Amino acid sequence: MTLDYLIIGAGPAGLQLAALLEADGRRDYLVLEGADIPGAFFASYPRHRQLISINKPHTGSDDPELNLRLDWNSLLSDDPALRFTTYTERYFPDAEVMVRYLADFATRTGVKVRYDARVTSVSKVDGVFEVRAGETFRARRLIVATGVSRPYLPEIPGLELAEQYADMSVDPRDYLDQRVLIIGKGNSAFETADNLMETTTLIHLAGPSSIRMAWRTHYVGHLRAVNNNFLDTYQLKSANAILDGTVRRITRDADGYTVTFAFSRADEVTKELRYDRVLACTGFAFDSSIFDDSCRPALAIRDRFPAQTPGWESVNVPDLFFAGTITQERDFKRSTSGFIHGFRYGVRALHRILECRYGETPWPAEKLDANPAAIADAIVARVNRTSALWQQFGVLGDVITVDGPDARYHDEVPVEYFTQTGLRTADHDYGHAFVVTLEYGPEHDQVDPFDITVSRVAQDVVGQAHDAAYLHPVVRHHRAGQVVATHHLAENLENRWDRTEVHVAPLAAFLDRCLRRVED
Image (cartoon, rainbow, N blue to C red; front, side, top):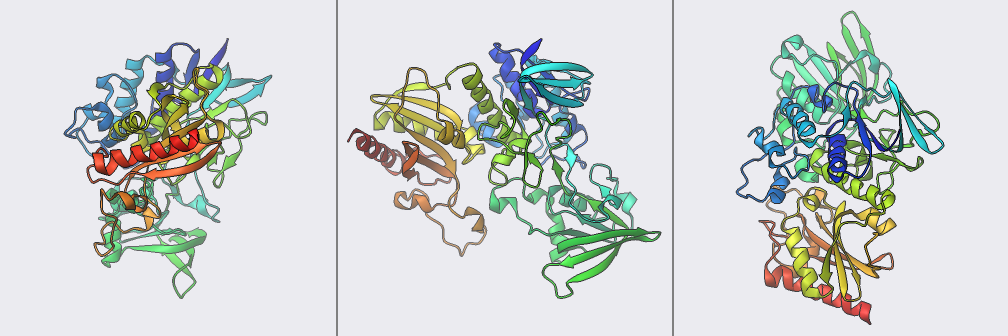
């Protein structure tokens, strides 16, 4: 039997896509999972067991769509029992709760998963994928949702001597009175340092890049405040330190480690430092070793992720798609595709892309009258409620296509996919379109949100909305493949963009000007 779709990996992304296919009921599919449970990654990671994905059950709203803005762990489902917020009230939950939640999601949605089916090889013969996992499975389309399962190891001589994040002890007593070097400056490095501060003699964190704070960049993969206690111990001179520069070499003898370090901001240039332990917390990468030469995907970003088109297809292997955290290759360190609260919407968009391409099914849309008031009302209603555009800022957009007196409103379209591919619509040959996104302002990551001496654009000021740093709606008019006009809605503290004089009327006036230009 040749399946329509074969999914590798029963983590959050694989389960999300499988649930959409199961609910749709029109395609043959199967998920292959190497472990005996879904979401096995979370049985081991993060090593210190605290998730840094927000969970907020108490929002003051009973709107499930709006509440997903503050729920970073749930997968998309119409079943209210499958809201992660019903599982715990912890703001940063324990990873074991995620393991239980994903098992329940798989059971309640009835997805087809083959467990203990670890994939050992993938080939492509006569346009069909052949996947070996004990037995051979065949599929016309393959979706890889395996996450980043391989440790990413920088090219440092002697790094193999270090203890890896995946294997190191997480018991602080095992580091009693020891000098510890942690290689890495991300969340895994800082969570490790935070865990060891009470028992070690000193801790150094080392890496060539600057530390970037998530609260400033709005990229949640940068250092989160929940993990940055170590910064206090450094800046307040409490024995610990952050080393900016490059580890040149690691050697080991009977008494410990010698690390040759080249400083990037200090006069001594290079120095040999002694440690009792060296821990490598350098992140993870996509493992492409299962693919043979007939379908090995090209890689990108220091070979950490598969290179992808705007529709999450391999750039060099047709019909090979990707889902989940590995899709962050498309918006690396700019948005949220590397995280559940981002890629759950990306997976839903991928399902629609697959149906458009292989099922000849138009992108879901609602009909509108193509007049400024109707379109403005539809946009305002959506931006005040949508969780997808809120979480996938600048990546997903709503697209309103216009054909004479008729318009169609399409939810959650990948913006780059639309600009390169367009939309297949039912009985609607559109001539131009409006694309609605939520975006932060220009150079938003250069603004210190806690510096009260830095002036900001006042909220609800219409004429200055384009300079606003905070998240706000942006509407762009596309015509003949080009953006010909742009309108920013004024930012608002409560994220309500529905004031008539401030938001609705200026938007309707912009739409009216655009529609009149097309008519002329």
